[in-house]
Image (tube, rainbow, N blue to C red):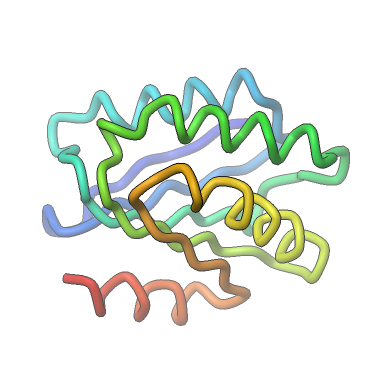
Length: 126
């Protein structure tokens, strides 16, 4: 899994992922995002996962991703995170993630099949 991170006008971040998902790289991606000079707790994020291959993901994968997110709760704060997917399978996997992680964090999550809808949802929080 590889990624790019973009700061949009110091208002929100866009993380674009591609390649085959694995938990170790997910951890590294989170570390990379939270180490950026522009990052601040509560900053909204769009995770653009349209080019990410999660075909080998399972419920354990979802739980591991939730553990990673929960570990960094203080650094994420009450950030709003939009997750952009490309098909029904991805949408379902990321909705599972949302359901598993939301009770344990202050942030809110939305899963979208359209980048434009995700961006609108993020901009509503600015």
